[in-house]
Length: 305
Image (cartoon, rainbow, N blue to C red; front, side, top):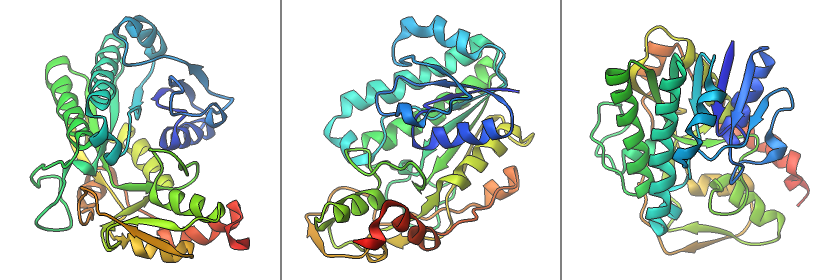
């Protein structure tokens, strides 16, 4: 079977590519390598360096997708705070790119697109855990743009006949996570700060809580979403661990001094209700963050610091 992974040189995408290659599928990576890394590219996959934001690249994108069963759409400018600082740049990347991929997938005769959505669409919710039917209240351009992608997927299913399903990720961690720059996750940021002998910096009081979800579980959810006969008409499905930890908890796991800074605009707490994922995909998370961090610390040399 042929699969196309758009954003396949990035954190999550490269892990999906590796799993598909392991299963002996034909895999094409579409990535402009702006945030994806060449060292993440599986040598058994074909790499197409294409910028999905440019409409004139449509013919090239269609050629990459011809004969593919499923396109996994992960490419985006990620993270909440940078999108607040650069909303126009994020709009161009996250909305135009998504539209171009959906149109090219439809033109190429692809059966299904699995879209990487975000729990950022929920914003601050009055009740937890968050269910897919809860009100949408994004607190950032990124959250709004990822929700727009869900709407576009649903429309392409209804108007163009392209099967789609959107997976709302919660906070993902794991192998190949970024440790520096605007796109880094908090675990990577803390680890990088400690390795450099710096104090871990925490926004606000650190008691904001996040549903940290292992990348390997996210990979499995994507593959199940590509195969399930229960989805394909623009369904939206939470993919989270189903429990949460505070930022202070994560700092405790890494260990070391910390400095609290001024708070930023962000949800106070996130927590996924995974019942729909279990019902439609047969998916459940398998990994807890506290069990993963010790091995991560050893791998990067933090246990010696």
